[in-house]
Length: 292
Image 1 (cartoon, rainbow, N blue to C red):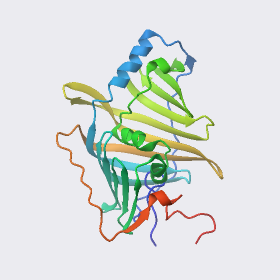
Image 2 (cartoon, one colour):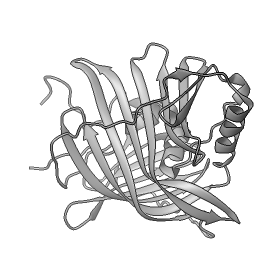
Image 3 (cartoon, helix red, strand yellow):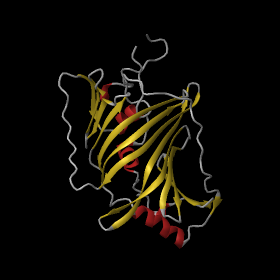
Image 4 (cartoon, helix red, strand yellow):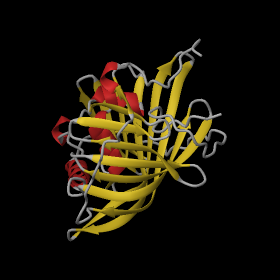
C-alpha cells in the first residue's frame, strides 16, 4: 500500500516512505522583551540589515527538507533547489532509500506547475497567493516563500514606519503594522543579520514564523554576506481540534550563491493528467472526514 508523504506542509502526495519519528519539541531563543525608543543607532542597524539582502539574487543548491506536522509525524526528503530572485524557481524532490525523483515544482512569473511523478498528475494554475497557500500551506505568497528558500528576506518596510521596538536577550525586534497583518523582525546587532521573522493577522489565528540559523560567510561580487544554511518555517493555524502546527526545516548541504550561469528549464510533462489549481479549494488527494 502506498503511503503519502506531505511536502511543504500539505502540498503534494508522494508514494515512497522515507522515514518518520516522534514529533520533536521546538526550542526557541528568548525574544526581546523590553520596549525601547528608536534611536539613531537602532535605525542604522535596521537599514544595514535591510541593505544586505538585495544583492543576493540567485541560488543553485541541494538541501535536506524535513516536514513536521501536528500529527506528531516527521518526514524527510531531498531537494535540488534553483531560484532566481523575484523571477522563477524550480524544486526537484527525491525520496526513498534510492533517492528517486517523486515531484517536480516550477514557479514561474505568472504560472505554477506541480508534477506528481508517481501518479503522473500535473497541477497547474496561476502563481497566486491563493494557489501558493494550497500548495505549501503558508498564506504569505510566492515572494515570501522564495526569499525564505534563499535565506534572505527583503526588508522593504521603511524604518520610519516602525510601530514598536524591543531590546533584550542580545537581540533587537522591530514591529511594523501593515494593513491586516503585523510583521516583526528579530536582528542580531553583533553580526548585523536577520535571525527571525514573524507575520500574523490581526486576529492571531494564523501566524507564520521563519527562523534563520547556521550562518555561513560568502564572498559575492566583492562583498561578504552572512547567509543561513538552515531555514525553518513554522505555520500556526486554528483547526477543528485546536491549534495546528506545521514545520518545514531546510538544511542546505551545498549551494552556489549568485551562480554565473543559472538556467532554470522546465518542460511540461506529456500525457500527465492535468488538474487546475484555480478551480479547486483543496488538493485532490486530501481526504475529508467520512470520505473513502
